[in-house]
Length: 348
Ligand code: G3H
Ligand code: 13P
Ligand code: ZN
Image 1 (spheres, rainbow, N blue to C red):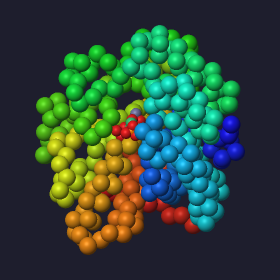
Image 2: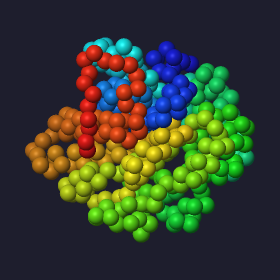
Image 3: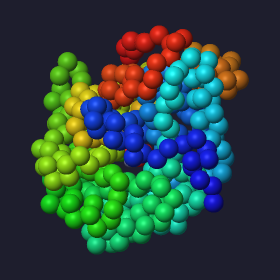
Image 4: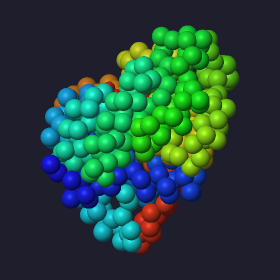
């Protein structure tokens, strides 16, 4: 049993309290490899943003669960070294979180190897089974001061039509019962976002100046939930904006992403000011990496040193994560002052 506290990690409790009080959302960025992790840490240290390093079940299988855990431990040390060089008077808080845990065993395994937070996603289960599974994880996690995120409502997929999507929004009438019966520390809800690069179909959108503008998120449902769970941290999954710049780059250099549509950044900015304390972003990072790598390999076909395309991809990721922290989530400049750090103004 390894305690996250010995790794320099924190759970999400204090992060969310501060985010709620100050009206911003903590970024939860997924990582599967070294370059993504380096970019997340660099961007968050250099914008003084708290961060949740997010590991999915797929990431654990891809990168090896033990290696990922050590990478996260290394990431904390990297952050502290950077902060020392920058002359910062306070560290940024870093949590290591299991994303979409689907069983008690998986959540327990993460808790036992040093994760500071876990999600147990029983949203696809019948309500009572979701309550039962989530409560079981909470009971174990809380013994070790690990925070737990539950989920109510199913995020719409591209295959769902509008009517089907409607029926799986979080039901505000269930939230108080779910939170009190399970004891979760935060709740992921469904208000119109979904995972991946195809969140909306073109026919659901308005075409304005060549850009598909999707219908707004269901802020009415969010408000109803906030009324019932006053001051309780809410989580938004599927919150990539599917940045046009990188979709276009992918398509320009041989890719084929047709009508990829995400959540407009102004919608996320609005959500971040509410009880939404954690915003999950994975796909935007994937698009940045793929776009830059495609561009470099197309322009320099003789290149075969991975550092020559992964390095620039990492640089672009840093820019994108900084942009999210500064301009979208509002999580930048929240932790301490650094003598040797200039505030940046990132425009993507
Ligand atoms: O919510 C899903 C995350 O984007 C993780 O995706 O399961 O492909 O690692 P993954
Ligand atoms: P995106 O696919 O929109 O990046 O969502 C990521 C997510 O919710 C991870 O849990
Ligand atoms: Zn998710």
